[in-house]
Image (cartoon, rainbow over all chains, first blue to last red; front, top):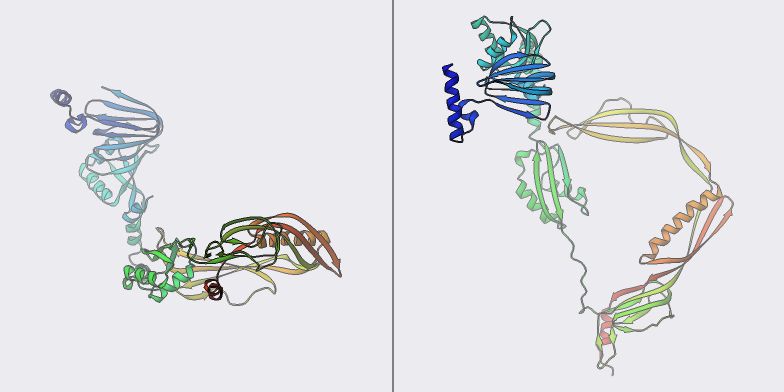
Length: 93
Length: 401
């Protein structure tokens, strides 16, 4: 709980000082390229994966991807690339 | 699978544990970069990792005990070399092959000349050869700047040349000199003569003294405009005029009705040879043409590596197609059509600047020989500027006694 509060404070501070959030406090950056690719930076691991649904844990929320033929085409400890026919990107706080 | 994957090697592994997401997260946290993650029907995770990633993965699996690793597939050069590590002859052969390819890349095996329009490629290649640049020349001995300078001196029609090497291919880019247009020089005394015989229909004299008028009949060589203008004390000029005249042509062509034509029998054969450097190695035993009468089509394909590196090897393929020469009798109409089109083409070539006013064809057949005669009336520019000879100039400049 303390960690969450600290992150919220950092996000607030980044907003005040006009700093990019993902660089300052590890806020996730989700980049959608067309309907075929999602690039997620600053993730904290996979929660669930399958061809129709992939859930990714991040510092502030859970990113849920829905679609068809979803596949994690590349992944490292900081970023991942999901490809497939993406139908929805949901953010769950 | 990319070229780098092939060179560095990649392993498709299956991670088996109760929750494969956990295994995947452990991999990511331990800096094992992977791709093409898929869940198998029994819940395991399959992924592709590099060779280094695979070794890390094994260590992580042993340390954490969270999952087991099973190899599904191994691909790439490191695994191939490991498999053949005891086949010495093969290894030596591969090393020799790599060495030879590396060595051959030090030599020129193909020369491409681009940018030339009027200067023949053979002339440029000959000039390069004179400077010691030819197929099989060691690239290290070629000084591109020196060769370019010397070729420019030896081929005066070129204004620019540059030599670029792409592996074993030498690219020669040239630019030709632009010829200076012929300038009107008023100081050179000329006269205008009739280039052809005809009746003058239009006459425009820009400079000089007009000697013939409209409706005059002239023959080839007649002086139409003199360079001497007898006004005042008289002066010698550069005569210039446009003289249009009616001209007549009578052209005749003949052809026999009996001719031979090719009839393909359907028999075909092909032969292959290898050209190594400049030496040809035939991959067949019998030389010469396989048929008495045949078409021969040769194609030469240089062998190149992926990426465009040219090897000193060319595959020469010769295709033979047999035919028989069979007698063929043309109809008079066919022969007439053929000769008419040739005569018209010939006439247009002769006219040059002008046009055909009327034409008439006459066809005769005599003993299997068809003769077509074209009679045509044309209008064309017949004036030709000719410089005065020393003798003519002397006569004009000598004061009358």
